[in-house]
Image (cartoon, rainbow, N blue to C red):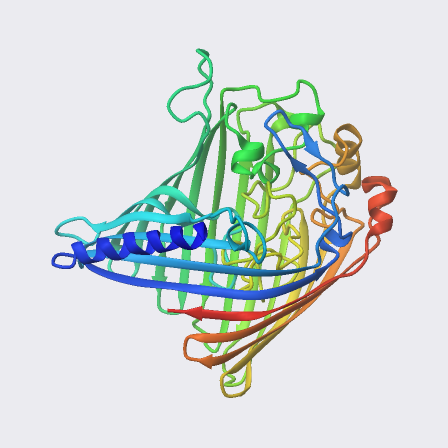
Length: 498
């Protein structure tokens, strides 16, 4: 009963605000609702949990200590309300309820209500010009070519300030952004010793558009404090740090401020339409001013092509390559740093639209519509691979389908991962099945179907299968490696948008 009362109160508050502001403000509401069942066998290829940090002291819940529940029913409701003063000024409030049937908010007796504000930001144009400014908790991402589901570096709802301005009409613009991902100590540090505990970034992008060609060169400067709660609060540590931070003496950071830098560009060529080509080139380094063992530095390159000349399907192909770990941990990491999705959640990979993926592949975390527990969460960083997809297949009205094959091969030296696992035990920095050695590979297949029952109500089925090579016992240990087997999922449900 408490659950329903809270939801009613929340709806009443929104409606009351709308009524009071009716004379001066227009309120527009959009949103979506998902209800779906998900059968997933052999998460992490073992059916067991992966390693996870449980506190900032570095205590680890080891891999293989928990067993999966193969069948879940998930429900998500999102409501976005735009309070529009005029064409130049508006505010967006986004709220979300998401849980499994029988748990938390969706428990029959004594529910624990979890109403989350996931967006809250102001948008306005500077008077007398076309400069657009937005500030608050909002979607923010590093540029990535549009073929891929999201950015490989960063793509999240985050507290940020974003300014976009046209420089040459229809051809060149500029985007400036400031994001603060964590502020662990808020107003006061726990002691009188000054230790920086924030993490923030500054981005510059220059979108370029000419007929048949688009490119967006960009750069991102990051600054983090060694007092920040990266292991549990932010949950991105395993995508950013070198294992040498913990496995090589002296343990920990050298400096109070830790700097990072990324640079890259997107490329899209449509001049040969219906043939279209896409690519990204990215370099990144984290811990630039640190001990050499703490530095993480590397490259990521992707490319894709598609033919859009058919009415009933779109053939697509894609590939990627990334630098991987060399034989030594003492010289830092050679993997490109990134804010890896699913980090800090113990291998819980939740799809959505906020991560790099191609063809909605079951192997990667991003793009899936039935989002929770929707993929294997394999990292394309420290690996190379390729794939092909038949997208937008439609031979029957209102029915569309997608078939995608993907192959991923590790690019990491087994020696570096073996050393880290020997010193740290099973750990979140290197996870079997997510981070592949140069002797390991995974192939995957997914077949997705959507049928529009009505204009705004879809019946969706997403299926996936993943087959690994033999994982190295000398790297991951016999217990995990011997347990590994094929993984597969079937998700089926309804999506309503309004």
